[in-house]
Structure formats: structure tokens, C-alpha cells
Amino acid sequence: MSTDVSNLPLGSRVVVRWRLEVPDPATGATLTDAVGTLVRRDAATVSVETSRGEVTIARDRITAAKELPPKPSRRGAAHLALSVEDLQRVMIPSWGAVERATLGDWALRASAGYTQRGNSVVPVGSPARPLLNAVTEVETWYAARGLPAKFALAGPQGFDPAGDPLGAVLLTRGYTAGSRTLALTAARETVAAADPGGPALTVSRELGPEWLEAHRGTRATVPGATEAVLLDSPRVLFGSITPGGGLSQQLGLRAADAAGTAPIALARLGIGAGWAGLGAVWTDPAYRGRGLAAHLTAGLAARLRQEDIALLHLQVEHDNDAALRLYRRLGFDVHSSYVYLTAPLP
Image 1 (cartoon, rainbow, N blue to C red):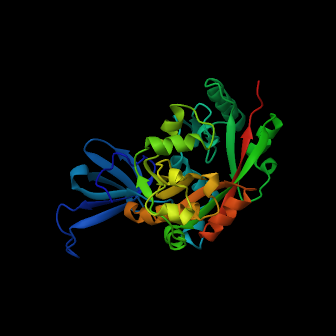
Image 2: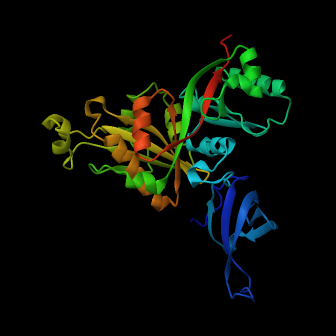
Image 3: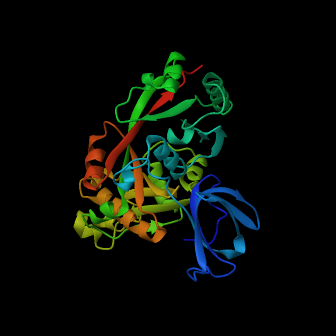
């Protein structure tokens, strides 16, 4: 845990450890924890709403603090115990955006068109106004940025958007449903233990030029916006596998390829809300089927021990059978799903 509370989002669930002014007379303890919602923060103090009421703590007494996942809403494994809405909240900070805004509880993101996640609304909670008014405000916000309004509407696996109150409104306004996506979750130790083995990994907090250049070859990117999105999470880890270090024999690389520095496998972890979100996973087509994606994913999961993060999530389109087989082998389970509802073009 860090002593810095400046980057902990207001409204997040946190634990703050701090020094008592005098030892506890019953136990002699000199430290105590406040667990709850971070409600206020200024230069001198932070305030946490706990189950016993609000606690205000002087910053110079804080010895450690970190963000926690939302409370479980059901029994079972920790990675499956969140509600659908809470998992959506957890996923918001793991993928970046150039611009963020809120409408009540809804989270709006715009990123010049780079990725659907970076240019969509997460409509969880209440927008704090009538539904039709909220939809109109969202449409206006995106139109001002030259983008169509897009909602990431979540529900159980296989849910029908027409059966959701917001989904029904959007469909009657001509929105189209597409890119049905599964949200998968797993425990860190399960994924790390499933490592099939392989070459050395490079893991960095920096977005290096080689990583970025390889990523540009995997999808359409937007200069400036792409870098901003990839770096926007509270904490980020960029993982890669490059030729060399004995990899040439393992993969049968040609001499020219073995001498290169361009990554042949990539992945990104965005850390926020007490979870890590896996994304931007890619393997050079020439080296697929050799376990590189599994090895890189498991290696990044193991690295999360240093980050004090125990749970992972990722998103896969529902018909991407190859990816689903990979992640199930690594110990991921389907938690829920979402579908993008996109406004018709003018």
C-alpha cells in the first residue's frame, strides 16, 4: 500500500491505515484502519465514511492507503461475487479515455473514435434526470465531439437489450445493437499458476515506442488519442515478448527475425478500483499457436503480486472462440456481458 491518497478517486471504496494520537487503551495498538467510501479530501485531511460513521484523518498520520474492490453482492468466488453493475464500475478506469464526463452516475467517454470502449457511455446507476432527457443530453455531448452516441448496456450473459428499460428506449430511437461482448473474470493466482512457460517477458510502466508501434499494426489508431487512452488508467503495465534471449530456438526464428527488437506479443493491464483489466492482447500471426499469449497473460498476472491486486477482468466478443478457449484454460470465467447500442448517423 502507498501513503499517497491524492490519486484515490472520491467515491471509491478504500482502506486507510493511520497512527493513533495515543495507543488504544484496551489493546495497546498504535495503528488503526478506516474502511469505507472516500468522501472528502483536502491538503490536510481525508474523510472516509465507514460502517460506524465518518472518520476524518490527518494526512500526516496516514501510513498506508489503497483502493478496494466493491463489496461482494453474492456468495462464491471473489471474482464472480460482484453484481453486473459493480463489475461495470470496476472496468471503467481500466481502459482509458481522452475525455471523461459524468451524467449523474453514468460515465461518458470520448477518444476521437479510438476503440468503442473509449467512445461510449457506461450507463450504470441513475443519470439523475428522466431517462429520455438523459439520452438526449448524451446524444448532444457526443454530437459536439463529432461522434455518435454509444451505450455499453450490460446484463447477464445472453440478455435481450429490448428487455432493459434503457435498451428499449434506445432501440425505439433507431439505435442498433452490435459487438456483444463477454466480461470474464479470474483470480490472480489461478491465472499465474496456469502459465505454460516460455521466453522472458518485458513488463514496463512506460509506453515504449516499440510497444506502441507494434500496437498500431494491430488495429486502427488515432495519433495522440491512442497514446492518451493507453496511459489514462490510474496504473498501467505494458507487457511484451521480443525476439532474442533464447527465443529464436524455441520459436524457430530466422536469424534476421531473431536479431529484431519489435515485439511479437503484446498485452496491457490497466489497474483501477482494486482490479486489473487485461486488454490490447496480440500475437504476431507468424507466431500464433505457440502459447505466447497465455504465457504473457499469466506472467502479467504474477506481476500483480507486486501491485497488491488479486482480481482480473477482460472483455472478449462473444463469438471469438479462439480467445475464449485461451482464457478459459487460464482460469477465467464468464461473469456477465454487454452490448453496444449505437445511435443512427444523422
